[in-house]
Length: 204
Image 1 (cartoon, rainbow, N blue to C red):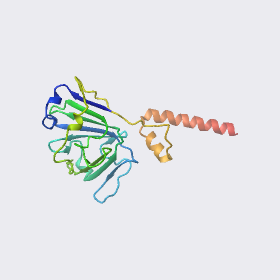
Image 2 (cartoon, one colour):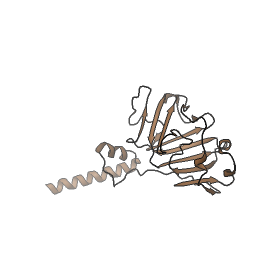
Image 3 (cartoon, rainbow, N blue to C red):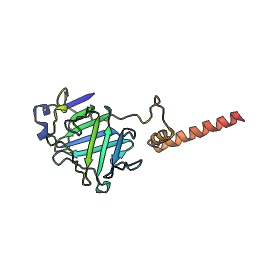
Image 4 (cartoon, helix red, strand yellow):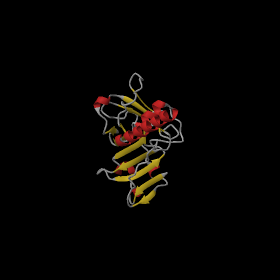
């Protein structure tokens, strides 16, 4: 786990200094879901704010609004089990990073606060407003046990696209392969074709 706070910031009230929150986490289709007003689940290629397998959003803390949410996404409910793989940054009014948590969800600030810290649950309106944002946000997770630094490490914890220790179904494997850069997809395709051709030649 990485927790960092800028020198001098720990002596101030984060509720007054922090203006934005940036959230990053791997969007794992088995542990994350979007549902609409009719509780219908959204499927592949219809996940707002998800790119290359990563969910990323920036929340304006005063209005608890997702600034990168688009009206065409509509009203949606996001539930995600993060499993200690998210990264969270607090930014000041000039969008300078002042705090960082990498790993567990700071549920004192991000809903749902009643859970064990593995989940993020957001009720998002079409204008980006998060309905269930806490009325009295608790920033203590960003302060307690944090390393005081001159500069915040801006790197993001990412889940590996492929994990050779896990067995995948065909659809899961294809989903992960399609998240790779195009040139890698092409090289993998060539290797698979070459391997299959060699197999046919040996059978003959």
